[in-house]
Length: 251
Ligand SMILES: NC(=O)c1ccc[n+]([C@@H]2O[C@H](COP(=O)([O-])OP(=O)(O)OC[C@H]3O[C@@H](n4cnc5c(N)ncnc54)[C@H](OP(=O)(O)O)[C@@H]3O)[C@@H](O)[C@H]2O)c1
View 1 (tube, rainbow, N blue to C red):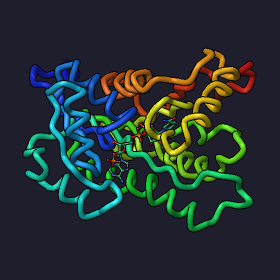
View 2 (view 1 turned 90 degrees about the vertical axis):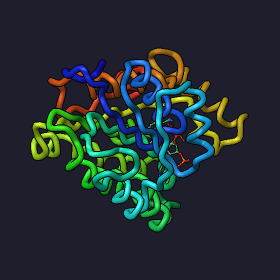
View 3 (view 1 turned 90 degrees about the horizontal axis):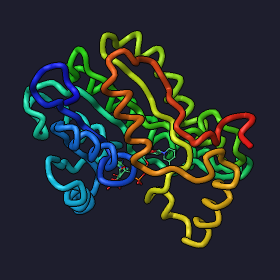
View 4 (view 1 turned 60 degrees about the horizontal axis):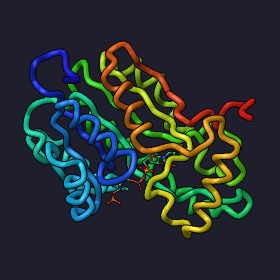
């Protein structure tokens, strides 16, 4: 149970039909929570609900569409009913905005902000009035925010902007708690844009330079998100979950 009351916690995972979001939803379901997962494809949502094995509601919505966001969080909207949300997790994936900086089309970087930064901002603004007073929001950001990997300046800008907002929001929106989990490389569908051979070579190379000797698994990020959401004394924190890959003295 994730709530101090006897009623199950109500959890919304945006981007819950795959990868980190799906693993997070599964972890909360295992905890006895009532979970709603969202994504743009009803088919992918249905498949995720099947994998999770019940105890999860699905709602198709585009997190980049302000109309969808407002409809979801409207009083009585989207199966939320009138009861407040205890924990909101933002795990939408945006992929645009990466690549060598000198070749980065500013329009592509803007598309990256449109795919992740602005959806997170708009969702937060719509969701906070529906959050329980002791509720939480956990943003899934990315270690690229503060790493120095060539080709990630755009992703650093998008995720760094989100991470920079966490401490002031934790104070401004208190007593609600605002945190972020900042993952290193995690083996999810996010990487399926790369051909398998290239992906395998990349993961092997990263494993060799990461202190724990491998890339991460979605459930490892889910467990970090669960901790942020359910520990009522954690607020304003950006938690690195990278296997040590972001440490300056790594290996
Ligand atoms: N995997 C990594 O190595 C890694 C590392 C650092 C940070 N992250 C961050 O972790 C978060 C989750 O990534 P992941 O690896 O779990 O990716 P994923 O497996 O591709 O899952 C992304 C989820 O977001 C949903 N989504 C994408 N765009 C959406 C939109 N506009 N509106 C609603 N839902 C949307 C997808 O469903 P639909 O496509 O059906 O909408 C899916 O459920 C992302 O913010 C990513 O930047 C990932």
